[in-house]
Image (cartoon, rainbow, N blue to C red; front, side, top):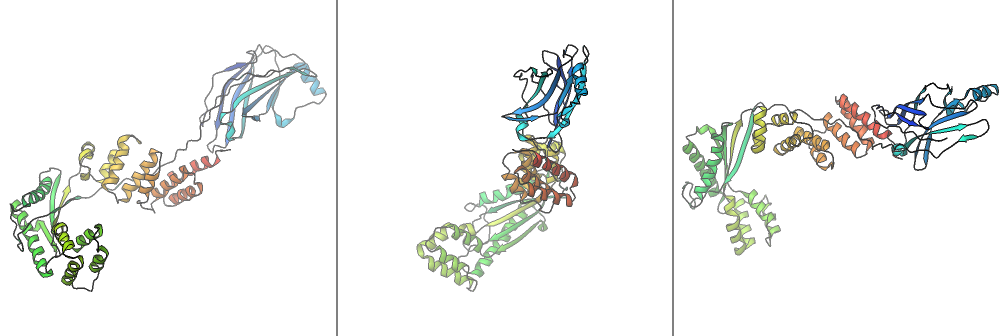
Length: 485
């Protein structure tokens, strides 16, 4: 007779199942489980098959209990338990009849009105088709010459083995503290001067707004209890029209005029402000021409790049080449923007505790050090919105920092999904760092490039990241061993 037995599947932990009864409630299954080994290539079956007191087996009969897995026409038959009635066992022994050894788990004689337990343990190669297989128990009861009972069986449950979920070890690096947090605000002012003059008239044309812009930048540092002004740098530029000598005089004089204005307005020590000047802003001129659609653009650029020409002659030839109308356009649309004063306000920032840092990151993240931002992430649940946001801000504030990019890449891997952002960040990390090698290995593992993953993990291990690299090599082995067919 055939009956079907349910087996509970679990992953690596062994979980006991609820007792199952079958064969007219005469056979009971207890402590059943199916587990996979760490390498995911071996299944283990562990269960107690209990023949209850009420199981009746005629003295000249034999019952064969055969567990098996079945799915989509494929079957894995496991060794059987053979249960003899008393007379049947004697006859078989006398006639030297024994079952095929490799197909038998154990043989026992049935003891009437007594409970008998067989501790059934089997291990075998895990195959992909077994993920949704049914575990069944086939029971055949035979007399001396023929099969006495056989049924189609009874479905109890279906295994539901989820696809392998790997758990890679992702590497982060704790940044070093900044001894002093140096920061800077940069800007450009476009002051207007009367022709050939180097004196600043605060009310002249747009000077009121431009000077206010400079003062607002300085005040934003001076009036902030979190920052301390350390220095100011001013760089003045003149445009190319006119003689180079006169433009040198104008650039130098107008730059000094702005230095004097700021020093006088705030009564600063003269040592606080440094300055320099560029007689003619040809870099800015060239950028304007490159971005333009002027008819003779290429010819103008060729003249600009001719280092053999005297600079005043070069400017006159460009004017002649462009023609009166185009050169007028350059004078009106380009040259005013080349007469500018760039300024940099340098300052230092005090350190912050964690609670202050959590507030500052919302509005003024530029005041934070990389380590302070990292401390926010450390205080959060990995994978949480705040955790992810911290690393995103760090990469934004320190876009070229290898550690900021390493950690942002690690965070993107941990988030899951598209790994494009992770790859971009890791490309800016230190390629020789063990953490970078490890994280690149994780990406390769997730993308199914197992050979590359192994090389990365071994490189990370050789570079000193043994614990995480070894853990990932184990995950790689599990993934490679997990059957796909």
